Length: 294
Image (cartoon, rainbow, N blue to C red; front, side, top):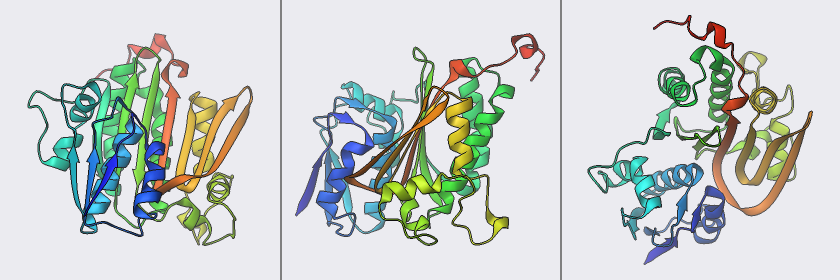
């Protein structure tokens, strides 16, 4: 029997979390065949693309046949996903031969932890600099934030790979990056050292300064507190973290950080981090901009 999952009109990852809980029992029930129906899709966002990519890989890795239907490449959201290389990765080819990554995206990529720093330095940073007009030399702080993000996600997974997708919105001067894996997740990792009731509170605890689930101080990095502080204070951005049944959103409100917690709106296997930054808030010295030669 085929388990048919109809993708929502507004295709963001949180819209799929309730279906994961309902159809797959938090991935404790893996059907023999799952078919994802794209016919209702009207708008796709990076988080939806990344999550469906990870979910497809997870299901197939556990012996499930995954197919797609309702694929009309003349429709904007399908064309967007085709240009993001989603179908090339999961169907073996692009829906249209003419499809190619758009200048405003770093397309969907499955990336090993050993490849992360090279991808950040040689792909993400040059692309963001060219898109936003911010010199690469002024993106050092952002580069460190991204490295710390990947380092911390690695701490919460037993798998060696994750997925990443970046979208630049030039009219809004906004960059959206989604990083996700299908590992054990933040709440389970936090509970190895502390008993915390809800998944959202466990996620929030992982962002406290000095917190680490690592057993030895030599294993500890700068931590998620550093990531939150720099994204909100220095990059004018927002941060959303989904893991298990919990969601935590960090926003800047004046001189303070505003935190919003949500629990029980579905189930996110592993960890997904949505990062938004305003590139027009990154300050740089235009006088020195021309002195950097390639």
